[in-house]
Length: 199
Image 1 (tube, rainbow, N blue to C red):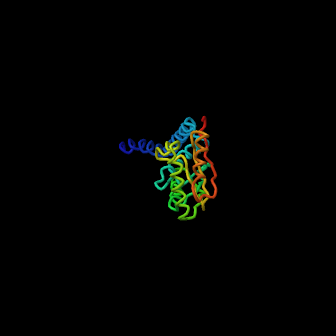
Image 2 (cartoon, rainbow, N blue to C red; image 1 turned 180 degrees about the vertical axis):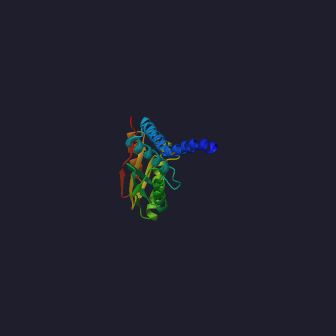
Image 3 (tube, rainbow, N blue to C red; image 1 turned 90 degrees about the vertical axis):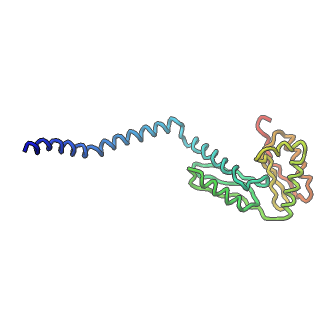
């Protein structure tokens, strides 16, 4: 009898604790979620910062593509969690890889592929090689050949040449245009080179 009476209060206390446990956990979880939201706000996790992070990560993925060459032009835009790819390439593998790389960036929910696949052409391949020699072989422009990323991109589509990228000065832009126009077999040259800000 005494032993029964001595254990009864312990059972009641244990039952009360079990019944209170969900409520205690709910309060603790609410506090954790609230503190996490405050922490996110403190680090500036705004839609603008989110897009900036995605922009940097997409850029990193694209410039790291193994098949990217001086004869390809890739660009992109980020709108929320949606990425749109632009540009031109004659390499189908690069087009596929660019899409795959953008899709695998954490936070990207949709990729729109507007990359133009240029036609395969032995004539265009010859023009590409000649343009490369004409531009990057020019002593005043050969410094642009240093580094991994080619700042002057040479896009050839059925004999029509487009120069894309960034140069240091207006004189370099004009010189690249003159050299590109001097290549035999070229029908036209569109000079879309931009001069680096502050030059």
